[in-house]
Length: 146
Image 1 (spheres, one colour):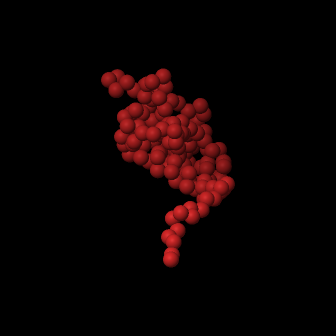
Image 2 (cartoon, rainbow, N blue to C red; image 1 turned 90 degrees about the horizontal axis):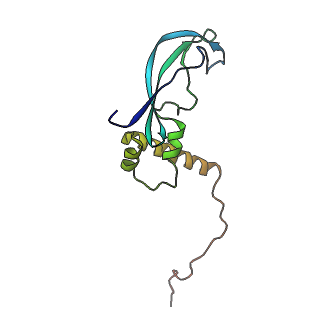
């Protein structure tokens, strides 16, 4: 199309899913599937949009409905782990608007990715603090008193 977007229509391999609450396998549909559109990393310079049916199942064991998870999609987001890693790469020195234009996604999606990456980095720093190798003292800045 005009936007140079590659639309990939995906289908599940199996008609069953594992319940995230109790771990039991279920094949009982809860409701009709809805189409979901997920942004993915570019492929050979072309923007990629994954389109698939989001299927909800009923668990016979715990009696709760659940959505069939998709392995490479970031939970509760509209983008893949590949796109997340590519945009959040610390080597990229571009602003949010430029990244949104390059990857063909919205400003809010890029902003969300960068905020998630920042939170993950802060959490990692809290868990394993930075190790100080050398500590310098600035003696010149101390004011002399007469």
